[in-house]
Image 1 (cartoon, rainbow, N blue to C red):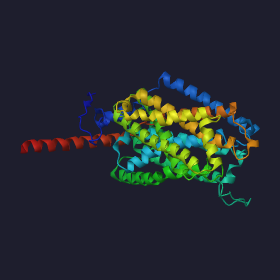
Image 2: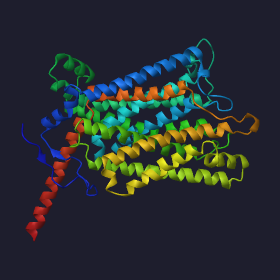
Image 3: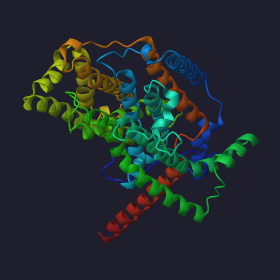
Image 4: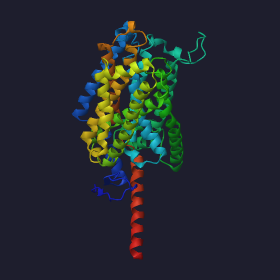
Length: 474
């Protein structure tokens, strides 16, 4: 096997400081290298992580069973805090899923080549986050086995959903987003599944991947239809980034409760969703890059681009915090002013200032170019942002409910062990799904990375010809 050739310093975009690929390999060797995590046996680290995530998933099953048998009274919800961990976790998980669509669909339509190495993991993250998010509206029903009442279909019961209820909007948003995300992810997998089928040595692997690749042969007709469908799904998925979390924000904005009844919630929630999703992408991408030895295709250029996006979306979130408190004061409404004041000085003030530190101050590190390419700094910052965004959902939901219009009903909230088990259990389910994805499916789009390598070669050849002609003219 020949040694990989060093990549020339010329990149496709002159604004990119770091190269998008750090090694040059023939297509066959590149495909073999990117399939190695799937074709080789996993190490002890993978098995240990799977064991931890499986244990947390079992805890989730126990918590769901207790909720089914005993009811939501096992949660810490009370009056007036009727919404708590169930809705907090729902908003947090569905927000995390937005970065996958942002990186895959929007950046594809804008022609951003750096997305080619990271979009597969971001899309997988979206699917597992949506599965975790979908659990909580169903559990919060109280009688989750009656979930089909939320679906508008003609039945002998002659009972239709209440279309004025945000819960019905959530069902439509989640199912639409999940359907489009699954189709977009699976369509992008088809060429790589065929590559895995042709590379695998074991007959059972060839049969499974052959079935999943749907007869892909890489003909010009296949590629033409694939590109058309991929672009159509990208165009369909792009407005969902805005619309889905806008609908989630309406769960709160349509209420009359101080602190919720605000027209700023849709853009505020969309910015927060992208912010938290990018943080989760970095939280997963950096360890996977190290464990699977993907430094040649997931380079410092990708880390730098993701850090820039995290900084920009963090500035949007910071602006939302400032104007939310400003308009609470500017309105002159004593109830709105009280809702904002208790965030800063009330019983949940420690959570509020933690949110400020994690979501406003930490992203400012990435004004420094050197820090944007430091994996340890990026990973720690991403974890802090994930914590901060969960706490943000906590104070948005719990704080206004705990001190509403009637002081006689004021009561603070404390989660029970079932609440904590549901949260940690969904983290385990999410991690288990992502680990299985890394083990059985190509984590990096092989066909897109090969295409990127060819485009870089063409760009370098063109630059070389231009410089040669200019030298000859002199």
